[in-house]
Length: 312
Image 1 (cartoon, rainbow, N blue to C red):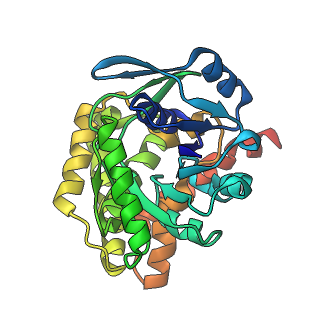
Image 2 (tube, rainbow, N blue to C red; image 1 turned 90 degrees about the horizontal axis):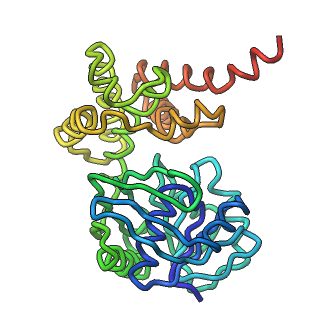
């Protein structure tokens, strides 16, 4: 049994899988793209980071070729999670642990709805860009936090501790937190503030920084999301959140958020697990979040626009 399966081996999954492989873990990168798997099998995986370039040779496969692993790290888009897990569920061991470090909210709960396997949830700030198949770049701030989905599960807690240690050994900044929900919400609130604005403006954090009228709206979107988090019983560090927004605007000038990449490629976005989730939860709680409601609607319309215009 492998140490790690990366399910959804795009930029971020490949980078983390590559770093774990380079440290001596047995890693299998699982991706729907047979071409990507073939490139990695032939040439290995090149990682570009602040320390330079690293060449590593993890196993690579398509879902039908996947083999069991102790940790199954899910890095697909949130709307692809269930299909991805179902595609490998019969290959997993009773000792396997599912791990979600995906963007958005309620990812752990979605996994728990389809399996009884232990679940570790968390969030990562690792930036990653797929340069080309088999080459991934990651530079800058890269903290990761992880913990159990079920706070009363000793198995999940120990699994999260062990995985965090594996990350650290591999040169990845990682920290175990018994209650990781505030970190998950903080990253989600940041993405709620930035991702859709960048996607709709065809811009980047740098463009948001250069447009004060837009930057103020990013902070306002975050404030609405924090209000929903608070009403849900999760305490988000507001000062740290707003500092993170300002820092991203200043330091990640030409970063292309995943939602912008999805819109440009005419793919579905993760709006449903970000601004859309905030709207849905706010409706349950009786809270008004008009800015997030507008943004969610605009992104959904933008997703549908190519089909709309092609149908005239």
